Image: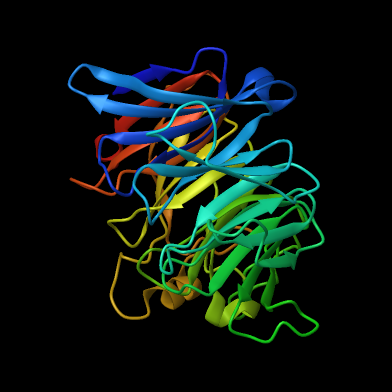
Length: 358
């Protein structure tokens, strides 16, 4: 396990470069993001451990970062002052572009993985904005009417994007649809909907809504998303069967789940970071059989309360963080399993999830 100390800055987000297997970006904030500066670190993995190749300071806290999919030396930051900034790591001191349209903190930025010419930002002001790096103003604004903690483009389509927010809903937008009255909104799924009960069992008790903090698209199954948040549960949804509720529910974290990400190598594996200071590796159970395994499990696997777990389980955990674990990401290259995590303990850890999986 490799370790780097982000002295004076608590980590909020960590991202592996899509171009280099040895480069990581970490967004951090002074004073836990409440007040003060932000800093974006560019870290290199070397034979002598992790070294800081470069960093940029910002006037306000940083809550997220994402690498450009079009330029290997550029990355975006999400700022507490409502700004989105584009940095080029071959240049010094200042961003090459800055956009200031959001009225509140920007909590997520994500580059279009298919189109590669656009990116999005989501904010506490209840909007998602889509941008082109060449344009000085946003291309589209999508209202969610609630504090939007996480938004992402689908890795399978340049015009599909999704978000989760404080109103406990997963929204899917399709930019190919007419804007009309719904602002490209095609699905609005209540995350707290209990799974469908098995025939002959009592319906599960309704679950109160709670803030959804993070979500991610599966990299192999183009209709599957996972969500997580304050209620400590990770859920997976199939957007073809939005009304059916979650197809898998993964309990285990003791406090809110701050970040989840699906494996780029294995279709059923995901990684989570939580305020309980652990990062955990999970399977959603979909690779345990053949055919329509997920639906069969819905019939067969229930706990005492009739809550469907979908055959998923925790496969291992990494408990080396000593404060909230806030960011986690998989390395796209090499043997599957290498990942990085960051947290409020001012540390970045690089570790092999395979060593934990059972």
